[in-house]
Length: 172
Image (cartoon, rainbow, N blue to C red; front, side):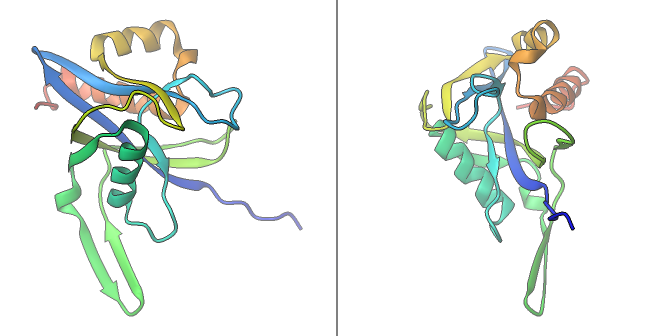
């Protein structure tokens, strides 16, 4: 009998700001020692959720570890519904976008939230390089011209965000 293997739950942050009337998104280059094919790909801050870790605490932890920034707002965090029953504590929430990897890399389910941050960027960490703000128009152009330089798990989320912004659903 084959050993059953499960997908890894992860959380991501689409961090945005409007500066000088231009929409910017925080991006970084993926840099993990044990990865060969994904090293250097552009991505959003994200990481795995530890066992029994609150997803919002995981998000804040990952953003701080990878960028040095402090999350001050997660869109939707105030709408969390928590239920306790016996030994169970269950949170219900709605992320901005969910993505699932079905082949290549490793099996992961990523829940991405829209966030706002404060603090000073640490441009390099043990998992990332070149953390920076990137104009949304440049992101859109880059994805359309050089799709292969982006980490696949974030592309649909970025397109969804850009579409929402163009329709006027995203604002400061």
